[in-house]
Length: 241
Image (cartoon, rainbow, N blue to C red; front, side, top):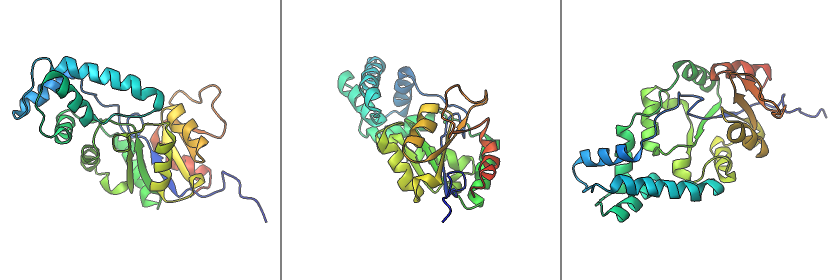
């Protein structure tokens, strides 16, 4: 019986990063912006010291989360800052959604979106797999505006999981969402460690988006493309779907 080589094995699913891959990187609200948005909502009582408290909470949370590849939920950051500053927040989760509704999400690249639609129409399972502070409802609204909501069979977001790439639980969630063996998944993104090396270590294949070409020392099993629009042709070159 002839052994199936990795490049001949069919691809059943693609896992796609968001910022820098499907979309141009979007803004992340700073402490002053968050305090201003909460004050504009009118309901919560936001004292003058909230912004400083929030900035301190975020800094401490990032320092604690980074070594473990974890992510403290944005609503929890709001709650902790409120406790420190004396602010009154009735529903931190609803306020987190409000903050990220007021702060524009990243703009989806229409050329990348077209390529993704083609892959979905070709029968591939498409999973959005990204690190983000934004709640799932906000990211889904972004996808609806870009007419991509029907292209994704599942969303794997660090804001929902509580862990970020390259945490093993993140990749396990991607594999579960794809609903197929990991070797039939191609993970696509622009960060070598998180979007290529990590997926490869967990049994998936990977295509790194690198406009400057192949980075030195990159594992030869990892494909390199300049833009997401090249992914259909790349998969076709593997005779993979």
